[in-house]
Length: 318
Length: 129
Ligand SMILES: Nc1nc2c(ncn2[C@@H]2O[C@H](COP(=O)(O)OP(=O)(O)OP(=O)(O)O)[C@@H](O)[C@H]2O)c(=O)[nH]1
Ligand SMILES: [Mg+2]
Image (tube, rainbow over all chains, first blue to last red; front, side, top):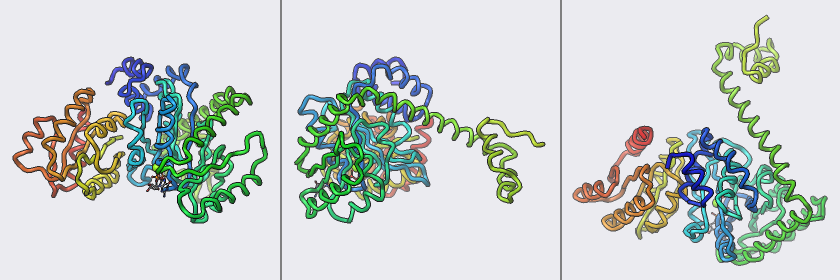
């Protein structure tokens, strides 16, 4: 499947092979991919986008699988994006989230794609926004995004997801870690998974304690739920809570503002791309090594060089 | 970016070899989707389709390749995934290799294969597309 119009039409009709190829183009950042996102953007915006974040191994993939199964029972169509880190050395990646999603991904109403972060920081990949647009336009009404399990402040998911679910697990002093990483500020729903293990109630209490300190806008006080994702326990309640959050977004008007807020972030991303491209070009300029040496020796102002990069042309020696 | 699905169809319980390959391909700069043990042909082809991989690398140690591979290739054709390279690794008797190739497998790599040969082969084939 190589023809642009075939892929675009296929996506609109929910054809999985077309969706898969469209996602590849979006990831590659080719002209085909950019045209696709642009042309589909108008028919997107209906899906509820849900971020699932948390430290490595807390059970994000297992929970996404259980949630997807449950959503299917409710007649929803589920798109899943799972991001894993790329190796900073080789640029390659091992994408292993699908292992825990075997039960749900065979359902015809579920589409799952693994994405590598490809050097992008913040728990997502550069292509995630475009990938959401493709899944949304293909008719998936609920989109689950599993971020890289970095356990750090993955604030970018807030720009993309209407509802962010922060997953924790009992033990390992993860409550303290959570504050340090600033993860409390990004969650609208908290899940203590592996509630079959000791210490789950303790973890719930410590999150509650810290949330009351951190929350300044009590119009939505983040609920804290317990789940055993492996057995699907607590997943129905989680789905109700997530739907409740969507309801809250709609009645408060945030839902309708969301795309506008998001648009600013998208503009920023494009700008970042451009600048990085300029910087890479500048590295090939004959003046570049000499400039770096001059900056290091204090003979040249780094801002002068930065201005050249910005304008995409070396400054004239005076 | 080359994307590969490393898949283990059938019932054999060893995935050390598959993991070694997955890591080697990752270190060669490829993106490797790994789906774990005991995959059915349907699961494998569905995963390959959704992940839109350039290469499907099958690892079969159980001796069940005469039934598994034809079924997988049948599904690959039914889904018109003709631009995907299918490789087979594991314990495949010499006599079975022509049969596997006739089924549409591009190449069979035996147990002692140097991972560099696999990497070189994948790079050549994918860039030739
Ligand atoms: N005891 C228990 N184990 C669980 C539960 N949910 C998941 N696990 C196990 O926790 C391990 C990690 O689960 P994953 O779903 O892969 O966790 P993850 O957060 O997606 O991991 P990364 O993607 O590597 O960050 C697996 O061995 C799961 O079987 C649970 O509710 N209880
Ligand atoms: Mg995971």
